[in-house]
Image 1 (cartoon, rainbow, N blue to C red):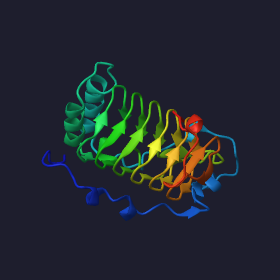
Image 2 (image 1 turned 180 degrees about the vertical axis):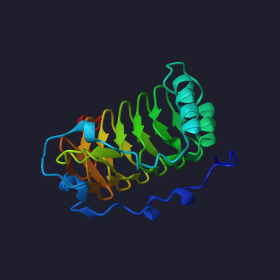
Image 3 (image 1 turned 90 degrees about the vertical axis):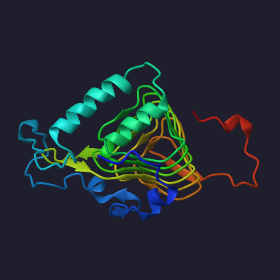
Length: 235
C-alpha cells in the first residue's frame, strides 16, 4: 500500500514517460490481428476453453476483496461522500493521486493500484475505469459522466477468447465528454477534446478533437480562432 503523505507532483505522473504499446497507425497490433494469442484451427469462440489464470491482478485476493467492499460503500453508493475521503481510500489501496482531484458518486475503478492521476482532475458520476492495465491521467483533465476507460479486450477470432490488456494514457488538459469509450492502448495527446459518445481505439496527437464511432480526428481550434458557440457543447 502506498504512503498517504503529500500529493505527487505533475512531474511524477508525466504521461510522456509512459511507454505506449506497439502500434500500427495508432492502433494496438493485437486489435488489428484479434487472433493473436493461442493458435486455433477454429474461429468459433469456446468459452469452456477460456483460461486467464496467468493474468497478473497486481494484488492478493484479500486486498482485492477489501477494495470491492470499500468501493461498494464509498464509491458505487450514491451517497455524496466527500472527494477527500475517496482520495484517501484510493491512496490507501495503491493509487497515485495529485491534489485538487474530484471524484463523484458512482465512479467504478477496477484496480486502484494501477491508477495514476495528476493534479486538478475531475472524474464525473458513473465513470468506469477498467484498470486491468495501467491507466495514467495527467493534470487538468475532466472525465464526464458515464465515460468508460477500458484497458481490456479479447482475441475474438481465437476460440480460447484470450484476454488482452493494454495501458491507457491521457495527457494534460483533456476533456473526455459524457459516455465516451476509450479503448485499450489509446493515448490522448494534450489539449484535446473527446466528444460525447465517441469510441476511440487509437492514439491521437496533441490539440485534437475526436468524435463519432469510430472516432474521426480533426485539429481542435487554436487559441487565436473563435469557435462557433453553438458547437461548443459536446457533453
